[in-house]
Length: 230
Image (cartoon, rainbow, N blue to C red; front, side):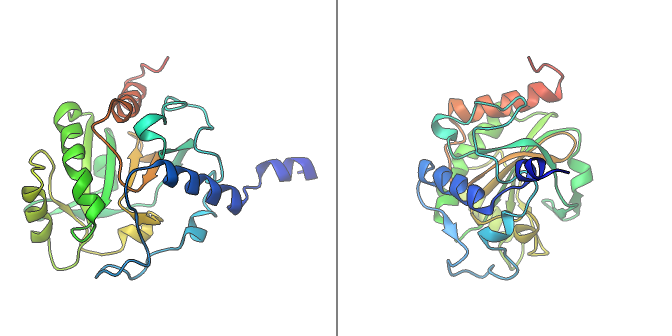
């Protein structure tokens, strides 16, 4: 590889940090950063950790694929992957007990929202996530709201009930490690995952998930899964 090719393929952590900063400034409300006191602080990465991810340095509006150009308006903070990126294998608990693995989610588009009961922005956006699931949820798409509180799934059940999120299932991470595994840097963090289990993009912080822009992103991902990408 010559010098020009190496420079082309090398991603600057500064570039990614700037992209995230711009996205967050364009986002909604407050983001709970790692310094926020909680009972879930162990094992979480710093923003510097995410800068080492392949493809992470691309600006949020760059990249090919079905989502290109759709991160506008309410979704300006959504960072599109230049190409879908592999995620580590993971598993979590479903309502009533039992495990769901990343392999079980393959075959459908998933909007994976990582949240906690102590996160005020999470409370504000949960009804919007519920509205998105109510409108677009199907065998081919699901909003997976994944709670990372310690102490059992009961907190998640109560929280969803209190916020009127009756269309969302109370998924729960008993390991307490998935926040770190997904290299999330703030709370909430939401990942859009394709039918092969790869990340298409993510948004750090709350957003209006019932907005036309959010629906357009999800519908484009679903259409791509169905082979209907223009």
